[in-house]
Amino acid sequence: MNKKSHPLLGLHSLLMMIFIYVPIVLVIVYSFNNTRLSGDWEGFTLDWYSSLLKDRHVMEALTNSLIVAVISTVVATVLGTIAALTLRDLSKRWKKPLNGVLYMPVIIPDIIMGLSLLVLFNQFNISLGKTTVIIAHITFSLSYVYVVVNARLAGMGRQFEEAAQDLGATGWQTFRYVTLPQISPGIISGALIAFTLSLDDFMVSFFVAGPSSTTLPIYIYGQVKRGVSPEINALCTLLILVSITLIFLAQYILNRGRGQKKHKTLPI
Image 1 (cartoon, rainbow, N blue to C red):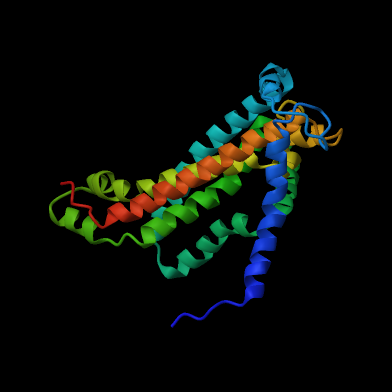
Image 2: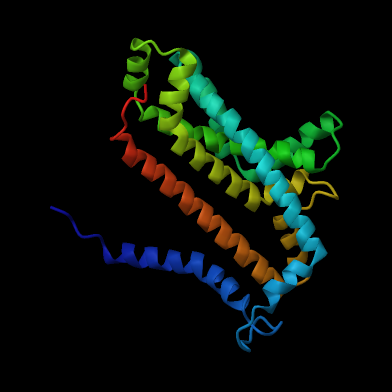
């Protein structure tokens, strides 16, 4: 018999949703406002979105963000997947400490991550720029890819791989035709999450970015210090929509992969 939750719990949840999402809704609404005065509504317009395409600084920051996000996502996805596959076969003696190390970037605050990477780059006399931002994004994105792929591997079992080996498949054939198709939803989901985190990251990028490697979140921060303009509202709205779309797509792919796993047949 299900017990009814206390009314105050529902009220608390409602207030939390309002506190979190109302500011986001206001940013989206005022990005279509036909005036630079954020407190007054003067009508609907798309002018602020079209002006973004003509802004050289916005386009430069967008290009930097996309370059960093694409490169860091590809590298982090490959390394995170390899790490998950490698740790899967390790003994518990080595698996637990290495697992804790890979989880560390997920747990520690972003400000600690950014500061520690800045100190590391200074120690090795590495100039701050796109390269340092990419390395930093790989560092924290790798952990998220590992977590997703590792969870996929944990629920997969080894019966198909063992059956493939019993039928004479080599290690590479087993991985290509059995293991990889089963973990591919986790790999794709991890890659989408890594891309989203890289695109939205501000704190870590702020510490390790150089003069010519300004990303969109850093650009938005610099503009907001002068006042919130409709162009910034429009830019934030686009980032919100892209982030939400990628996160929902990653979750959809992961859930679809779990549903299809029950109907898998041996492709040998």
